[in-house]
Length: 238
Image (cartoon, rainbow, N blue to C red; front, side, top):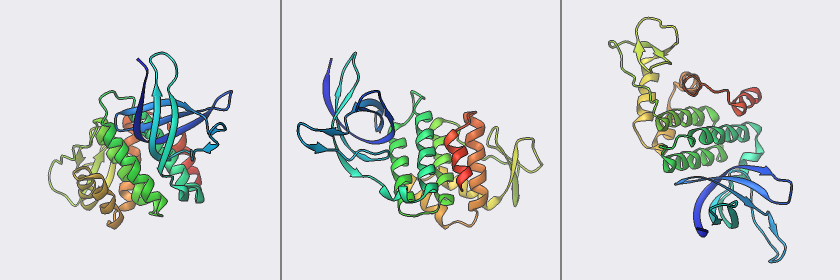
């Protein structure tokens, strides 16, 4: 049954179509909605601010058989500062690809994904360095996907080998291990056990950014078993 709904959401991707319409993928608290939208309505002489990563209120005509149609968009935040820096824009594209991957899990917490994406976009747009944003995003995505590191250790030590396979800590070197200090391990533990905003704040203030940055990226790649094109591009422009 067709219906018109209102949803707050973030545009994750915009694709061209053979006509004037654009194909949108919109992240909402209930899932990702695919819909078509015409950038400009000549009849009402009204143009909508529509760009990737725009966050706003969408009025969507939902159908059972045909395509969903965006009737209007009331933008709340557009994050235009991302377009001033290729690194920030590339990072946002990587985050979007990760979100779309995570959303393929039917049991995923979409509200958690929406909150995570919004906070990451705000921080990048405000000029917070990538090294303070990207690791938290990746670790929180891993948590939402259900492969959170357990961080159990054989015994106390000042340094550990973090096993990418099971997320455990070992004193002796392991095949898929990543050497890291006890302080870095504790930072990861705190990131995983606090809310999103506090996690980003902790990362900004910590001295173990380099280690956690590397560990988070390797961990998400290991467990998703996927080559993210946007990540390869990001690493190429850093």
